[in-house]
Length: 359
Image (cartoon, rainbow, N blue to C red):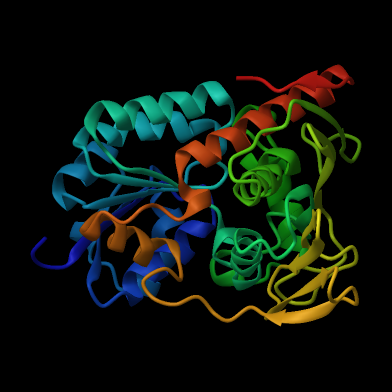
């Protein structure tokens, strides 16, 4: 592949588009070949931040793809639009990176997989938690047999709410949050809003990765949202596996954002195995481990990830150029099991009963 690796960013619904474009901008072998959104105002910050020239800015997807001729397309639409946008860009046969969550439904996820399979396009689903050193160290310890057979995966995660920050974790005032909330897609059921659809996929997908692809047999979930909201701000999901139960919780409205200071309950995972346990908190530089030989919880360093697998953009460039496998949670096969869990949890909360895993 001669010349810079060309990347196009399409749809700015999700604030993570700015973070992903920064990764392209900072990569020595890549360039932002084009950006696109129906609303030019939503691209203004990226244009200014990354000095994107006018001839690389588009409001029409087809025009952007034709002019940019990208090697990789980054998609950040509202969750309910993931399938539609993948079906628009996949026929070009170029790699597609969809920002989490995978989709609004298993049916949509399968549409995305089918569209990319038909053209031979690589499909990857980015989960930012997949790049945290702690969770990668947890997977390495599991694979090394440190805690024996994994019996339970417990997850609690979220933030103060999706409107409290922009790209690069720039904080937003309470007044601005209140102004944007009534019209934001994050709080619209038809757009795939709500904390369950926003965050359960993290726990379900990384949990499936920790369990080497194993899926639960049944799911039971309940949700809560402030009066007047269309969507939930909190969910609790119980997953029934052959060997026991796992619990996954999502929360918009944590006391603090975990990237500034960990709230209580702490955000991250606890893995229980037949021979030990691992506490893997977001943003820490270590995990806490218990084993039969050393039952007192003790820290195990979780060093920073190394190139070319520190973040999604450089990882995908490496994968596309070398044929290396996708990092576990980005693999649609793993993410699809996560989506099955999310779909079943959503239905369970609506029907107020335990359900067998769909799909």
